[in-house]
Every structure is written in C-alpha cells, then in structure tokens.
Image (cartoon, rainbow, N blue to C red; front, side, top):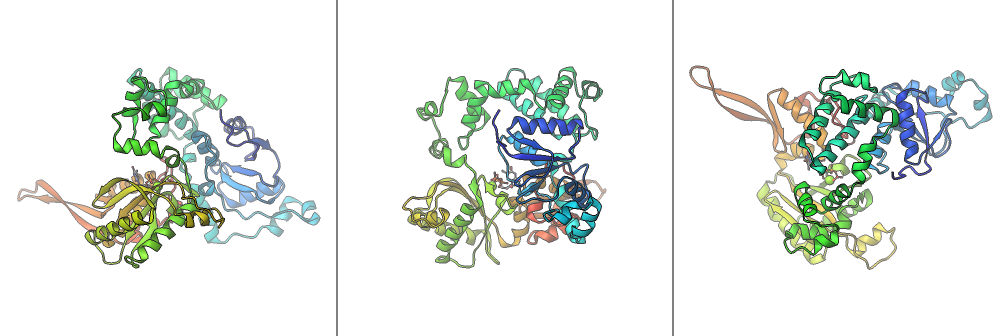
Amino acid sequence: MSKIFNGSKFLFIPNSTSKLTIIRKKLAQSHGAVIIDRLLPNCYVLIDTKLYSKDSQIVKKIVELGGDKPDVKYLNQGWLVDSTQKLQKLDDLNYKINVTVPRLSSPSIRNSSPETKRQKYVKPLTRSEIIESNLNRSIIGSSNNPNSYTIEILSQMAEQRDIQGDNPFKSRAYKIAIDSLQKTPKYIDTYDKAIKIPGIGQSIAEKIEEICTTSNLRLLNQLQKSEKNQLMQLFKGIYSVGNTFAQKWIDEGMKSLEDISQRKDLSSLQKLGLKYYQEWNERISRKEATLHREYIMEVMLAIDPDVEFTIGGSYRRGSETSGDIDFIITKEDTGLIELKFIVNKLLENLKITGYHKCSLTTLSNKWLGGGALTPEYNSKLKGDIKTDEWGKCRRIDFLLVPWDQKGASFIYFTGNNDFNKKIRLKASKRGMILNDAGLFQKQDIKNDKGEIVDSKLILLESHDEKKIFEILDVKWREPNQRNIGSNFIL
Ligand code: TTP
Ligand code: MG
C-alpha cells in the first residue's frame, strides 16, 4: 500500500475509541501517518463533523488538546477517506474547517482552566462566520453518509469485478448492495447488521464486516494488484481510451505502452494520447493554469480585447490542481457564430506563437486540444528563472458560450459532476429542465379533449447564474461550495 501520508501527524477529534475512529486511525497509519494525542505544530486535526457540528464544540476540544499551534490544518475527516481512496494526498482546500482557535502560548494562558481560556481568548465568531463554517462542513458529501467508506470500497470492488469480466452478476450484486447502503441512515459495521438489509447477501455482508473491522478488504487488494487491473489502468490513462479498448488490447496480449505504440491500428486521438501520456496524466498547478489564462488573454488582446476568459471546472471551484484547463469563453451581447469566428482567429494565432500543440476535437461550440506555455511564460512559472524551455503540453478546452446562456453554462462547466446532477434533479422535480443552455419550464400541450399531445419548453432564465439558483429555490453557493459528494442532498 502506498504511504501517501508519510510521517504526517494526525490528531483525531473525537479522539475516542469508537469503532469508526479506530478504523480511520488504522487507515491513516497504514498510509504512513503518525497518530498523536495533543496538538503539535504542523499537525493535521481531523474532525468528525457529524459528531462535532458546532464551532464551539470544536474549539472547546482543541483547547483541551493543547490549543492552536503554528501551521495546523483543521480538516473534515472526509479528506482522509477520500485521499486514501484516491491513493493521493488530496488538496485540503475543500475539506478545510474555518474555526478560530486560541493559541495557548503565554504561561498565564497555559495555566488557566479550559473554561477561562475559552472565555478569555476565543474570539467570538460572527453569525456569518458560523453560517459559513457550517456550510463548509456540510458540503463534504463523502462523510454525510455513515457508510461512505464502506460504499467506496464496495464501489471499487464492483469496478474490479467489471474489469475482471468473469461474471457480470458479481458486479451487479455489489451495485445493489451499494444502493441499499446508501439508503441506510445507520452505520453498518457487522455481518449481522448487514445481512438484515434487503439487497445485501452473505458474501457482501462478510466483506462489510471485514471493511469495518480492518479498514481493509483483502480481496480488493489482490484484485487491484492483479496484472489485468494494472494494465487496464495503464491503458485507460491514454486519452480517449476507455474500458472497451483497454480490454481488447489486454485480450490481444499487449503488456506495455511500448506494445501499444507499435500497433498500426491506433486512431489519431490514441496516438496523441500516447505522445502526451505523462503530461496529460499529471495535475496542473493553479499557478500554471493562471499563467495559461494570462498568456491566451495577451494573444487575444490583438484580436478582440472584450472577450471574457473564465477558467471553469475544478479551478473555479478553488482546487489547487486541475486535470485540464476549462476556458469558458464569452463576450457581451455576442452569439455563437461571432464567438466561433473570434476563437478560430485565436487558434490561428496560437499556432503561430507555438502555444497550440494539437487539436483533439473541434465542434461548433468547443475546441479541445493541447497547449503549452512559451519559454517566457514558463520562466514565470519557474519563479522568473530565465529558461528557454517550453512548458509542458496541457489539456485545454475552449468552451464557447453565447452571452445569453452565460449563467447556465457557468453552472454546468463549474460542476462538480455531482452538483450538476443534484441541481438538475431539483429542476426536474419542479417540472423544469436545466442544461447548459438554460433553465426551462416544461409545459404540456393538450388537445380539445384535454389529452396531452406534446410538450414545449419555456425559457425561464439562462444568462444570470444567481437567478437560476433563485428560481430553483436553491441557496446560492459560491463555486468553492460546489464540491459535493454523491450522498449530498441539495
Ligand atoms: P472536467 O474538466 O472533466 O472536470 P473538473 O474540471 O471538475 O475536474 P478536473 O480537475 O479533473 O478537470 O469537466 C468540467 C466540468 O464540466 C465539471 O466540473 C462538470 C461538468 N461536467 C459534467 O457535469 N459531466 C461530465 O460528464 C463532465 C465530463 C463534465
Ligand atoms: Mg477540468
């Protein structure tokens, strides 16, 4: 197992001996974390916000455990769970808990009782700070469901069963069990509890107990280590390659990217995917994405200074790193045809400057391709150390958005996927349709007898992002509050 937390110090709140805390501690340790019992500088404080939902409770606990120390990160335990699932230490931005904690540095403070300390040194939170921090905590969807860790492990098992392709019923059984667990509000940690839930059979009930008592599932480890799985993941890392091709290549005896590159039947997208395999599988830092925007806007200046470039996707949601750079391109009072004309010119100029490295897909409303920072901009990335090197080729999307559809498109291209699913569901429950073109009311058309013969869509709003939320009666969420999990209820 990889040691993603190598040597990091973790303090758990609650620091109790509950089963869930023990499991999570074991999980953290197995990934290299060191569990501590008092706050230390540079440590991570991982809070179970289901149990500690109020700022005052958290502050009290932190004071009891030694008070704030320099460079401490206060995070929702969802960060630990999600990081271990993804096998990488995730950005903590979306899991941060904003509490104001007193730092007990002077002796007089250290000697006072917790109660006095709190009264004296805790800066009272304003109402808006409290609302904000509660909201921050409540958006961590992965920990909204007490069984989210089990669900994630079972989902990985379903995926493995699909990959192994031995028996489709095995993967179906996992999906049914996951569905049942998602509807279960109680923490299910034993065989006896699990077997009582409709949709969960003997074999999966045993696995649930194993997951909850050992924070591990041996069979999953074995399957993930299998050669077939390793090859599937390797091949699916090639842009445009999904399960079907990866499976076919494995069946044909391919063992490495080198083997794939020798094939004569590769599509042009697969060839590009191979060429940029490394670059396109790396996360892009926020700083680099910002420099891409600056660069493109500079080139755009000579064409049309009024075009707006917004980076959507994970960047707009505040993430420190992104998989690609999603440019949402729009201009006041401008439609798609004119935008397309402008963006074509932009692409021509980017080819001349050398930024444009390849095209993957060109449609009337989007261009997907690869772009790299010029040496001048790459130097800025490297902290202004002059370099002649070009930046790495990154996956770039240009998403062309007519001005009147700006709000609906911003919602769609900001995501995340789960947020989009939930907000669309909200719309459909109200007889509306939300897509990247707008929010529409569905209206039935009836004949003389009152029978429904057709339906039409009436546009309610498309330009104003906030108004769309308002009409749907969804409280406005800043983009960085849209990092929700599939269990989150909007
Ligand atoms: P992505 O760029 O695929 O996702 P992302 O920017 O959130 O994450 P990453 O850092 O890995 O690039 O898509 C951009 C947005 O488009 C996404 O946040 C939501 C929306 N979207 C969907 O709603 N459904 C989808 O299937 C895809 C691919 C995107
Ligand atoms: Mg993206």
